[in-house]
Amino acid sequence: MKKISLLICLLFFSIYSIQSVKLYSTHKTRGDLSNFAQAMWNSSQGRLMQNTFNYSIHNFWGDPTTNIPIDSNIFGIHFNPILIFFIPIYKAFPTPITLLIIQAFFVALSGYLIFLLSQSFFWQMSFLSYFALISAVLSEFHAVTLAIFFGLLLIYANLKFKNYTFFLLLIIFLFIQENTALAAFAFCFILIFSKKNRLKGIIGSIFSLIYFFLTTKVFIPYLSNYHGYIFESIYGCPLGDSFLSIALNSIKNPFLLLKTIFTIDNIKYLSKIYFPVFPFFIFSPFLFLASLSGLASNILSTSTLLKSISMHYEAIAIPFIFYSGIVGSKRLFKNKPIIIFLILITTTLISYKLFISQKLNRHVLVQKLYSNYDKKLDTIIKMIPNNASVSTQDYISGHLTNRRELYLFPVYYDKVDYILINNNDNTWPVETKIQKKYIKELSTNPKYKIVYQDLDFILFAGTPTTTL
Image (cartoon, one colour):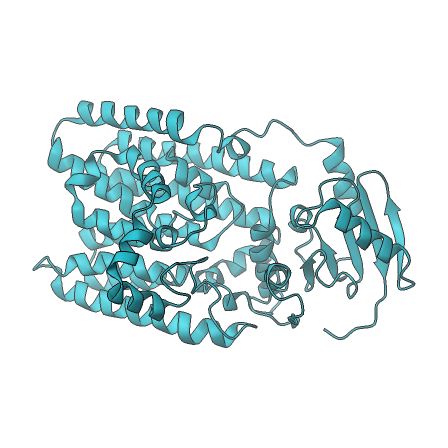
């Protein structure tokens, strides 16, 4: 049984990794992969988590006058110390593909933990084909996606391992990203209601809250160029622009809290998320509430992106969503695996038919294989020296991460050694007409010269005099 379960994991690992590499090789990946890849490459060179690309993204969307020191630390954006454990692997295989393979491996292996928790291939298959999970594993690379595996491992440790192992895995889970602490707190708080696990729950919940406070109020502000935690506003929350104001306004104005939570968008969003484990999660209400803690920022935010299920924003909640379903199914249909199977396959198929439509197509079915366009772009990229600073577009950046200075065009476009941009219509994040103005400016700038140009791409090279 366990060997079959591992073979299923291997099958899904092959699917996830092949598709991820295909997306990368055909230049379908975006800046989030570039963020982590540049930080990992710098770390492999002895510059722990230094990153300029992530800060250039926030520079573009935020204050364009903000300086980006060369030693900017990516942990000032999100605190992901778990990445440190993978530095030796990245040093041996210094390519963004390494991160994609690592992510695919851990997500696929999560299916084995689901099997151990449920003793059911049906649950494993449902989990590994869950649309939010597929979206997370095929949407660039994000350290927080590792929460899918380590969240399940924490749940399993609570059931099978001694307390010291549980707390070790709790620390690892917290190391994934600062906001995993909220889900850890919720899960540990549930344990308080069990006499057997009460002390573990008290210690774990208190430790998780302290860790969340330290990371968001001390560690991240200290390491950040902005001297604060830029996601504290939760992408626009009606209750306030800081954790303290959100908490106080929730108490002072419970009507506003209810109005923020119970919106049509949130109801639709949560229906999509929980329908694949319906009705089982209803019969495990405490775990259901714990899973909601992993979705808290999505629910409280007005951002439609966080509710699109097209990226990684559900990763922290996924382990607790499925564990609530497993526990609920055992309470509802104990020793009736066929009924559970029929319900799971029905809810999964309906979810894809009614809720997902074509949203996952660009992740699951990449129609275009490696083309002459991709080959040409890779040839141009090879013209740029490895030690050169570069400003380039989002979708090109993933192939230029093995360098100390990398920026999202047009950030620092007049301060770098090379500028590589699309010369046609794929100009995001700037509009085509604005990009033409940049090209005209660079073409007349005596510090730069055109070393390559065709209908698709233009490459500028220069020797600007600047101190970053």
